[in-house]
Structure formats: structure tokens, C-alpha cells
Length: 126
Image (cartoon, rainbow, N blue to C red; front, side, top):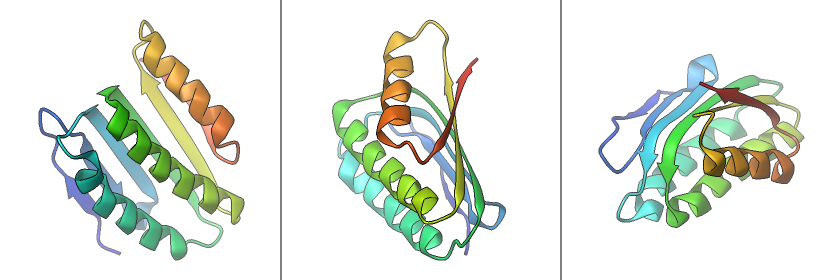
């Protein structure tokens, strides 16, 4: 499957999904005018990739300095797809990068860890 790369903008994150290497990365800020329009094709490609995974070891790097509420809903859909893949027998490591002073990002990461227990969550203060 071809990689998916979307360059960051001032309001949307960089998406760098290297499917052949089983490495997925999101970084930047996420408050696009229409989060559903931005994330829907990303999640669709992710689900297509995950449907082909069988016993894969997938590493996900997330380094989001800020995201709004509409992005949060879409991020939950993305993490749900990853959690389902983990439940199906794939190993999914989620590296959650954050500013050690940012309690909001920390709390969201903790919520992800609790809600998507099949993911191997690693808190990464930077």
C-alpha cells in the first residue's frame, strides 16, 4: 500500500503513514475548519491498511500540541480503528508525545490509555 503523506498547515497536522513500514505519525496542531473532511480520508486509508494487517507490529507516533473538540472526535475514531486492530491480534504501540507542562494533552493521553486498553500506550514527555 502506498504511503499517505499530508503536509502540515497552520491548522492541520502532518500525517505521515508509512504503511509498508507499519509506522504512522501525526504531528502539529489540529483545528481545521472541517475536521471530518480532513480526517475522513485519513481514517479510511488507515482502515484499509489495518484490514490487511495480520499479526503486524504497528508503531504510532502522535505529537499534537493542540487539537479542538471536532478534531478530538475524529482522533477517537482513528484510535478506535487502531484499538480494533490490536484486538484482532496486531501489536499497536502508541507513543504519545507531549510537553511535560501541558496538563490538557496529558489528560487526553490518559483518557486514550483507559478507553483503548488494547493499545500499548507509552507516555513520552519531551
